Length: 149
Image (tube, rainbow, N blue to C red):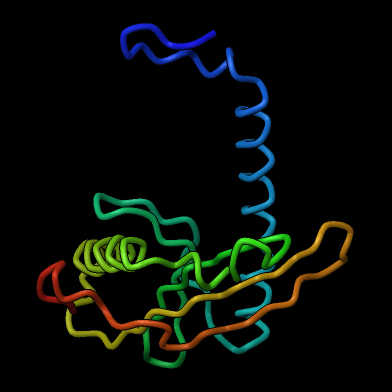
């Protein structure tokens, strides 16, 4: 059934879309749990996961010594449509910067050093564990968001 005059169909009318969304959410959550294990083994201290605020969403906040690390986790089953790291677009970097600035303000972390990392997990179906690539200092804070830290 097609929408009429711009009406939106309810989610339940598109079961394939709903199922795909649920599968993607479960797969993404699995990737984020694997990312936390990886980061802990790498010596980082996990501060928070799945942080949502007025700026957006942060997958993982960690500490690496005295440096705050805002981590974007991208999990894919293949690199057919591009590597997981390539999915961190300029728009996504801008949103992550905005969310990090809001979280730093909320927690009163003014003046703390920070960095943005990307954790790319390539996890083919049926594989027991993913191939993980950790991009430290993956990008700089987007200055268009305003003063940072």
